[in-house]
Amino acid sequence: MTDPVAQPAAPPPATRSDTGFWLYAGHLLSVWGLALSNLFLGLMVIWGVRHRRRLHWDWSRDSVLLVPAGLFVITYVASIATSLMPEVSLDQLRDVLSYTTLALAPVLVRGETRVRRLYDALIVMVVVLAIHGMGQYYLTDYGTLHRRIVGLFSHYQTFAGVLLLGALLIAARLATGGWRRPSLWVAFGLVLWTLMLSLTRGAWVAAALTLGAYALLRLYRRPAAWGTAAAAVLLVAFVAPDSWGERLRSIQDLRDVSNYDRLCMADAAIYMISERPLFGVGPEVVAERYPIYRHPTAPRVTVPHLHNSLLQRAAEQGLISVLLYLWLMAACWVVTWRAYRREGGAKGPRGELFLATLLILVGFNLAGLFEDNWRDTEVRRLVLFFMAVPLCLARSASPGSPTGSEPRPESKPSSSSASEPHALEPT
Image 1 (cartoon, rainbow, N blue to C red):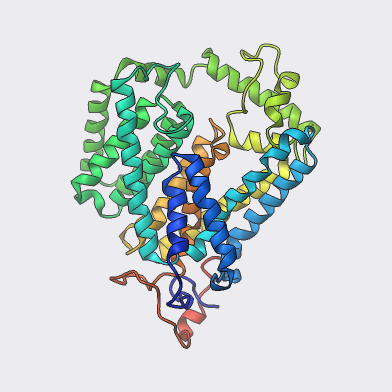
Image 2 (image 1 turned 60 degrees about the vertical axis):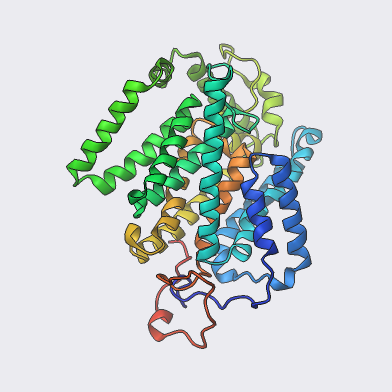
């Protein structure tokens, strides 16, 4: 079986329109306005249905992610059908359409050139959003704990989630040779500073652990680099407002009302899961029935969600859904890690593209321990694209190609590549 990265599939016909790609790009680059993003998504799906004969999935390659994603969607529909409050859950059926972000990426974002083009555009988008958020903080009455900056989004958690993904995307580029470009450092600083201004502790912890762990693995033999990092941390601590220190100290304080409230939510989630372990109580039903299950000492009588992605999935969709979610994340990690290592890691010609997915998978799931970020459509939409990147690059030109254009058809794979293991099969 051929290696899908080293020996990519033959390209689609040269007459294939770029319309599908631009519609796909449009729905990602407009997540700050969900109605506009949904419009692009709808047009993209309609275009895909109309031109379905031009779209060519490689099932032996793409199924490694599409199978767990498809089963996850099926269990989501099953949880709607078996919901304790069908009239509430049925409205969430429209959410199924958002998973086409993952399904259509391999056929609409084909090749290295298009992936890089989208990466560049996403970095610009996140920097613009960060600048807008800084304007809110410094020029308006936003900025307090009870009125945090939201950027162009409806909630500060969503804004922080997008900033987190953007920071990790830029970090991947810096770590793979981009550190020589001052503009990238400026962009990284703007996004990280705005993330701190959001006062969102879960995103802070996710960014710190993800970037810290990667730096430890890469720079543990370079004392000079650690000295520079320590100096940067001290500088930030010196100029940071007092509110940052207060939020940092509150992370480990169980007497903090917000922290205790999360423990009460976990307690309620356990009761919900024990009563409906297979398909849960139903999408959006957790908020409706929380008062029934809440701990007597919980600070709040009602909550919109359980502030934890895994607990929220288990309570509203069941344990089967959680297992499928973990399967999807693990499969994506294995696929991406294999390709990243095969092509030379951070020094490889496409190292930044794979590294971005790896960092985002870690950061996103760490943040999900403190916030139900899978519930944020805007954040999830971006994550689904990054998860699909290894499938998109499997159709790219051979590594190191100067143009990154679509590959030329090959009449017969070499015997050496034919003997290599399938790159997209999880262990």
